[in-house]
Length: 144
Image 1 (tube, rainbow, N blue to C red):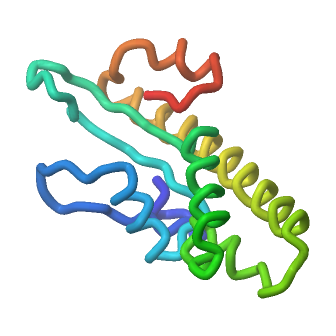
Image 2: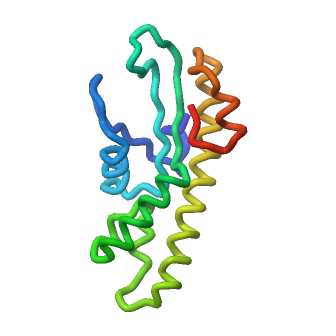
């Protein structure tokens, strides 16, 4: 689905059955110059009898973590997800920098959410989803 759309460049974070932390997935996204991170999982759960797919998007908590990372290490601002740090020149007013980052992450969340909803819709057509998908989606949290 996403591969056929010229606006998207899907990237796999792994090629086998092993765990990659959220920070690790974010790192892959940054290295690829991603504007958003949508994490798609199939049959992935600690309980091997669990079946279904899930989709995760950038939550407010994760966005705040990314912002905090920039505030703590402003010299690494180019590593921020979405390249937001690239738009910030050295010596820029810190309030302006914060506003630009807030806008970037807000946009990443909105676009990521829209893509995740579309991906969930397609996944639903070919298999089952993990439980409580709709409930989490409606509450506005990161959802599966």
